[in-house]
Length: 254
Image (cartoon, rainbow, N blue to C red; front, top):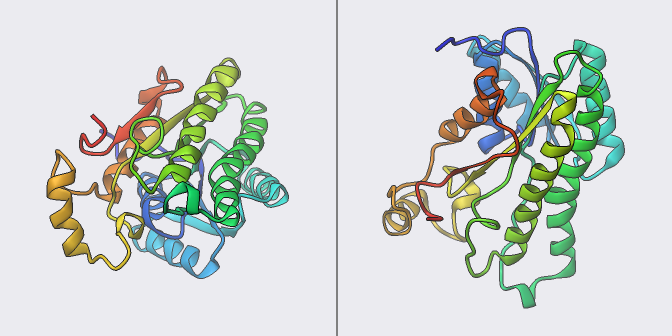
């Protein structure tokens, strides 16, 4: 397999300051892409850019809140103006709010949907509009979750609902825009080696013990494993893959 599948291509990754988003940004940079790492915190984004540079890749940081239409539109427009195209977009930005549904604050519910659902909608709208103007179109990968469409866990109902919406948005948009050369898919990670998979007060060692019972695989996924799935869906090797939802959870949702 070529280690430069994305040479000469411009890739936008939201939520790139940590976790899966950072791993995805670094993986694209390692394979020759010009990466735009976007998120709300400039310090974390600069760390991602620095790590990409140390690995021989190219990345720039851009501050944007995906729940704000003006931010998203300016972000996509700026990428196209600077680099000439937007070839791949990974809509990874997301938040988690847990707890029983009946006890959830309306503010937390709105925060979940503003970021996880409206944020993906706004990103898709801007990205598709740009990619439709390009001779080669483009590829979009939305990051959902195994919670929602595939699995339900008490205390995650609101989050699951937001992620099920992401999966539905992906399938509908994929069907609407494939004729325009825009390929849209989803990855749905389960528990991954990020802070989001830690329960309140839980250590990584305690999580490892818990996962031996909770996951058929017996462990959390590494962020690089999720990143590899994203790169596959964005690559030419997946040209016939449209509207799929690739679950990466060690069999937890089976």
